[in-house]
Image (cartoon, rainbow, N blue to C red):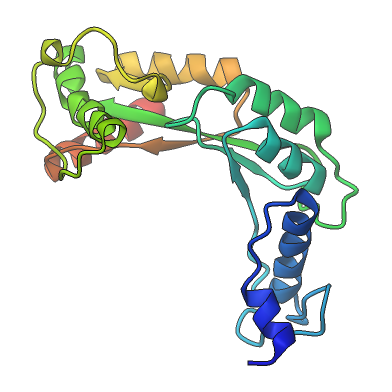
Length: 214
């Protein structure tokens, strides 16, 4: 293609200003005219779609960018919880509704939570070992499919710190844990992540969650 379009397609800079410009251009391609703001490149396919844009992050750096751009912020707290509280605070403190990229008048936070719901706490804890084994494999470099649940005692007392944001148990247990998480973070929206070895167990978990939460 032409050099201008090739340059637009190959953007990979990690610089905050370049990232902000890329988002601004995306908004242009989704706008009614379908034209980016930094170059006269028109996208007929995306014109008029007005797709809302989120910033996904897990650190204060990503949070700051989302805030300065006036965009909703999705926190990857379900596997990167270390800077959760600081990131949300930085996002809210840096939020600007006056930025050219702004989609919101005030901050809006979505946070990720690992969730497994079962009929009893003990059953849920056993099913959650599927997730714990998966993260053990990631940390040790093993490449395995999801493994069946095991007795939690087989995995030892210390779970992965990457999985500290979770709600696991019977319906009321999970509801309480999620309410505490919302109280802690002030999250406007939750995105729940459920891994199970048996798809039917996952479906049951989602149904119990829906009944308990709504």
